[in-house]
Image 1 (cartoon, one colour):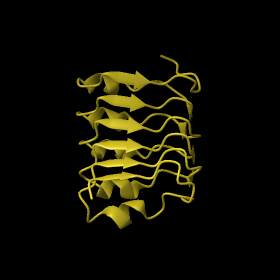
Image 2 (tube, rainbow, N blue to C red):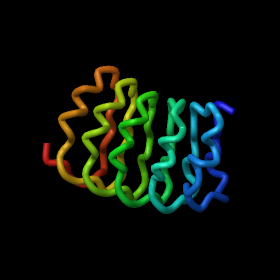
Image 3 (cartoon, rainbow, N blue to C red):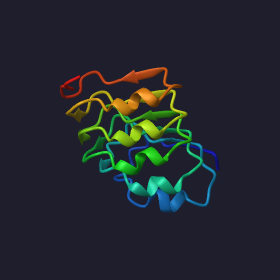
Image 4 (tube, one colour):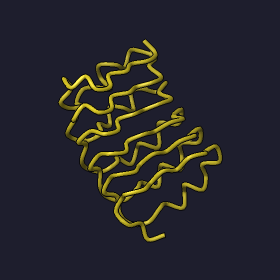
Amino acid sequence: LSFLDLTQTNNILSLDGLGESLKHTRIEKLKMSSNGIGGTLPDSLLQLTHLREINFSHNQLTGKLFTDIGLLTNLERFQIYGNKISGTLPTELGRMNRLLQLNLAENNFSGTLPTELEQLTTLRSLIIHQTSAFSN
């Protein structure tokens, strides 16, 4: 299994156990947008070391981005727009050195944009509209 698209299936309530369930696969693309999924982004995603694309847009995700998110260094597209994720952006995002697109729009982030984002030399698209105000 390399690609899993569960967009608009409406029968997923949370992401708990997701990484554990898929850890023995070589999944590269994971799309679960528009499902009304609640809860937080699970750190078990770190078990999915082959991931190149995550799309959890337009759900009801809350909480903060866990700092180890930067360990997903194979990610090229990280899309979590249209949720209720809050807090500051972790500086570890700067470790995602293959990232082409980062879409964090329509969430409740605050604070400053980490200067470590400048290390993302492959980044072509940073989308942060309609978030709480960033101070830089």
